[in-house]
Image (cartoon, rainbow, N blue to C red; front, side, top):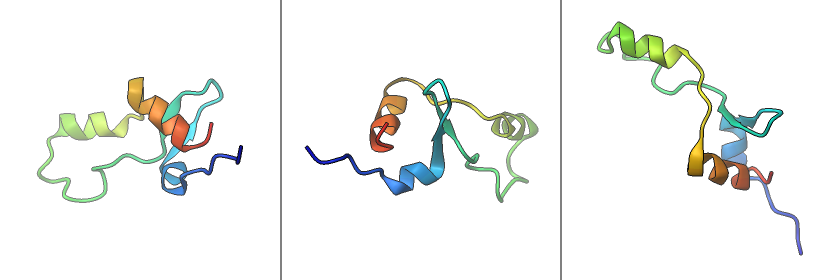
Length: 65
């Protein structure tokens, strides 16, 4: 059986932690048009968060892990 190929688009946007959880590399929605977003929303976007559930399972599969 051939090796699974890594989806490079996913590998550039996400990393696996040592325990196998999926962590996004950058925050979307924080680069421009910030004047219309309220402070609470921008504060939430500052914090990095892990991806869980079925979406994390799919990301791991796409990364070949």
